[in-house]
Length: 312
Image (cartoon, rainbow, N blue to C red):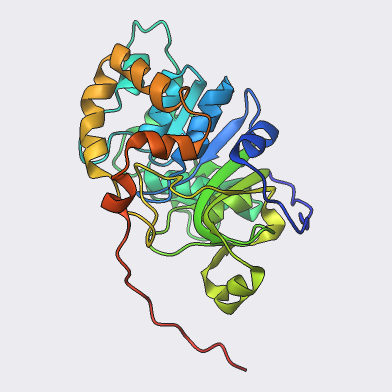
């Protein structure tokens, strides 16, 4: 069960991505790189690959392209997940290759339902040892995952499935904006950013924009993660490409389509990693290498939300 951490009150936690990853992500650690459809920090994943941090237990509800790249780079020993694929396109081919029965690079896999993974984070973020749920009735997932157990309800006698608490060693959360203290704001589609941050031992917040604390305080209901939980803050515009950041840039759908052919062949996969991960020193060089039309093609058109009066 998680011990509750001391508040992290450093007034300025702003560091480079290279520094944040080197300090927080260690060989053999349990990594939770959050993101659900948008706000997937590919920039953080690429820096982990550049630093060759190995033997990772990679944890996420939807391990899409960024985790597939970690797997292809040979950094993952175990995958804990609830769904895997190239969204809207097809398979994750690096994952397929290491899943084959005769693969020399076979990795361990631990599967849950989506809500099973959410429940694990809810338990971890609440300081509880497990979470009960009805989610596995009529499925075979519990038959192949011995960590899914059952319990009798002390009030009704009904039998429930349970999943163990999840407390990652480090959670990496991409947000739209944050201040230097780590107070982080998110809008649009929510994933498990809050639960992951509260459950993890260490937290890296990656932000599209760094703003003054006064901006955060003017719109407090958008603050999903308080700075007292955060170890490092990284300013990384366009850090989610080919994913998207609501209000900043759109999803690069053509990239996901093209990825099917790139990732199917180990040789072309290696060429991609050599060119766009190992071949650049940071996200700025990555965006430059993607081409001059990328930002103009994907930049979000303004659609302002009406503000509210917090007067007192």
